[in-house]
Length: 71
Image (cartoon, rainbow, N blue to C red; front, side, top):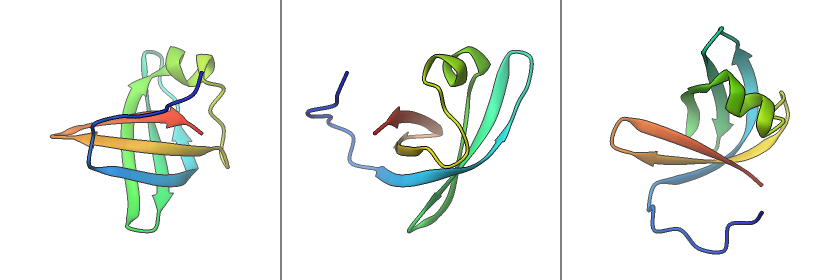
């Protein structure tokens, strides 16, 4: 799967620096040129996306929600 276009203006490309696992949701800290962006996503999504420290991601920010897309 690849992202060809997305209408979100607040996008931050970065690298995962820390994952704080939880039983249902986990925190993912992404280091970007603008600073650290933290996303709270399901632990299952971390597993499904095979997210690890050092993985390059795209943080998509909308209001108070931060989504991640693996690049």
